[in-house]
Image 1 (cartoon, rainbow, N blue to C red):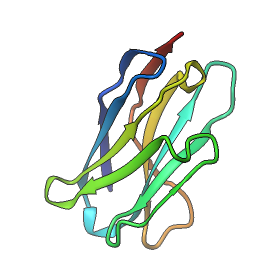
Image 2 (cartoon, rainbow, N blue to C red):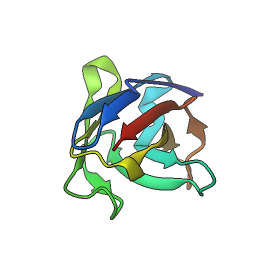
Image 3 (cartoon, helix red, strand yellow):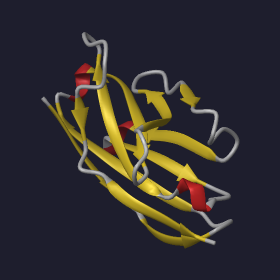
Length: 119
């Protein structure tokens, strides 16, 4: 089992920045990748970005490339999502999720944190 706890959401003006944190616990040795997703009201869940636990390789959804950066601190069991140049359309509940080494999908999810970008 892996547990995730997001924090760092809030209200920010367009053009501003926020950093989300995701603390992972439990069987962290089994983690392959930690991903970030978001879901806006009345919209489908969208992939934002991800980072592999061991190598730190990152990848991003097209809508956030060049603005958002994923990073991790293994010693703190924490993954970060640095969000820059925020737009009102970035408003959503943001979730972190884990895919384990033996899995093919994201099986563990955090509770989500609200990000609201005002125009």
